Image 1 (cartoon, rainbow, N blue to C red):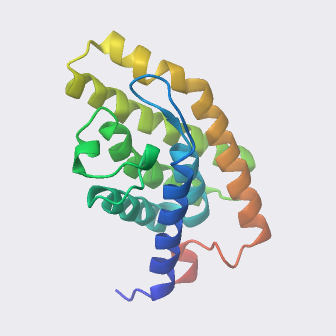
Image 2: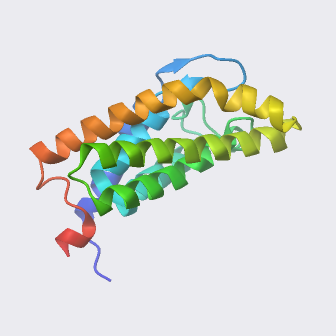
Length: 183
C-alpha cells in the first residue's frame, strides 16, 4: 500500500485545527461545551473517514503525551481517564462514522448535515457511558449531566460543520478529494 506524505500532513494540520477549536469552551458543570465536536465534524466532512479519523488520532495522541490540546488547555493521560474521557474516545468513532457517511454522498448538504448529527450523537453516547462508569453515576444522572444539555448545541454545531464543510468541498474540490477518488 502506497501512502503519500500529503494526506499525513493534512491530517496533522487538521489535528492542530481541532486543538485550536477545542479551546473555545463554555463551562457547564462536569462536562464543558467546547468547539471539539464542531472541529471533528468539519474534519470528517472535509477529509473523509480515513484522514479524518487519523486527524483525531493525532490530536488525541498529542493530548495523551501531555500537550495542552484538550479543552481548557489540558493534556495528559489522566484527562482520558477523567469524566470527559468517553467524549474524547467517542471522537474517533464520530470522525469515522461521519466521514464514512459523507463519503456516500458528499454533494448533498442535507445528507452531510445528517451525517454530522449522527456523528455528534455517537460522541455523546460514548461520553455518557464513560461518565456513568467513571463517576459511578446512575444512568439518569449521566444522561442529565452528559447528554441532555448537549443535544441542541450538538445539533447546531453539526449543522454548522456539515454546511461549512460541504461549502468548502464545493469551492475547493481538488484539495478535499477523498482517498479512494485519488487512488
